Figure 1: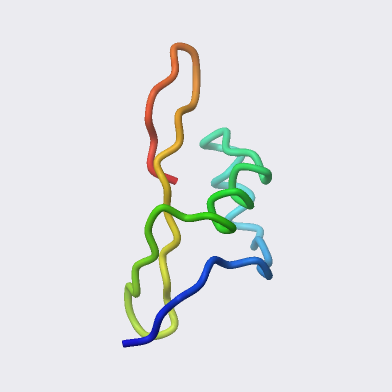
Figure 2: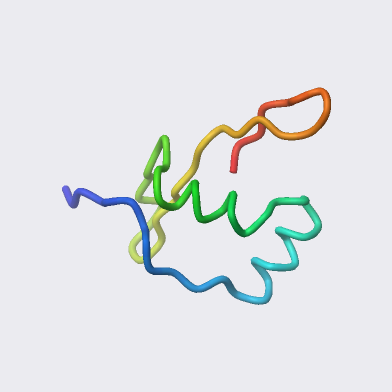
Length: 65
């Protein structure tokens, strides 16, 4: 089993930026989740999911990013 570490070197694609805008997720929030994810999952070969629950909005609501 390969142990994955937090991601510090990444590139956001145009699609990712569109989805971030649509979902109102800042680049800073994405960087924070990638640097300190609550969970790292090996989804399939070549695809790893870095995710955390984040409180957003007013009143705050928990979302999985």
